[in-house]
Length: 507
Image (cartoon, rainbow, N blue to C red; front, side, top):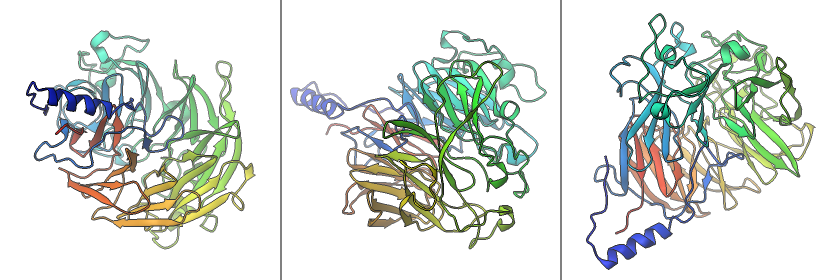
């Protein structure tokens, strides 16, 4: 779907178009989920709409059809928009049945360009949840795309797809696309071009659970990502207790360079789903990770690649237990207990002014309802559980979402159907807004507005201010579990079935 303003050839129309372009002077790509290192869900874009209407096309630039279940957050760079989805509505008739899919569209008009197709693992559904698709948002740098597939494979892709030929040392795209036991497929122009592949299962010794998920963090020549190591289908056993929670790969080759040495496996509540962040604390760079045990960790970043065949160990600088009174031993015996259980961390940490902000609490599916937004002093070292907390704010219920920090405020949403605005310095609440649906998506702040969608399908736009002001609520075609993003003056909203490019049009 593409809609354009009907030109009248008038001087007034030209003037209005010029003003509209000037309003997006701060335009920029959005090549990863959240800001580049800090992971803050904030954009400097301006000139964004405070309302839109999918039914009439008001402020809708274009709409692209996805699968029928989409959890991936889109990223935008190099004139391309990429988003993970499933294969319920096949773009290529050769690929029938359940698959993980990463689709690439033209940023200008939403035209489909190419896709990565990944068959399901098969067998135990808890290894690769049916119809879940590719849930991980990719990270783009230059002409390279880094993404984690539904099979827990880290892939480096050519942003151009096969349009410029099959590049790189990896030449088995046809085999990669084929279901287990089937012959390799012919590689077409609309297929992805894989440059290298690293399998976290065989290469890092992890055990996948439900849906592989990470947002890969790039730091110079290195890729940092959480591994997705988790429980088995009984939800009571850790099959790979010695597997890492955090790994570092060589950006050029995919070689495993480093891993954490914190032995988090036995304390994993459900899965290792929190993606890493990076920040500079008083001149010292640190990698932050929300552990699957409800503990927050800071590591020294890798300084140089180890010799071939060796894997370095990341040094832990500090650890902060977000829920110190929760059960620490035999945590899986509390499965299904909504009053008492261990806590875990599913959202990304956000680094901001020598502080780390994180949401934590009982597991969404199996744990207690209690959850918090916490602010941690990132300048300390060692075990900082007793002295590292600057403030803690109670959320209404479970939380999967990463907070957004802007103008001295922290905005958070939870599964208790509530939007929260609190003071970033003190944790004092400014306001809350009840909604009709729970939140899995994370909020975005841009152009003085707060954007976020619910699992019920209502999209909220509020003023990102200390006084509550609802600007609009829009009912979408289906529910949302991916986060809105902004790039080059356009707001991107992903529902279960469609990707909307929303742009303020001159009146």
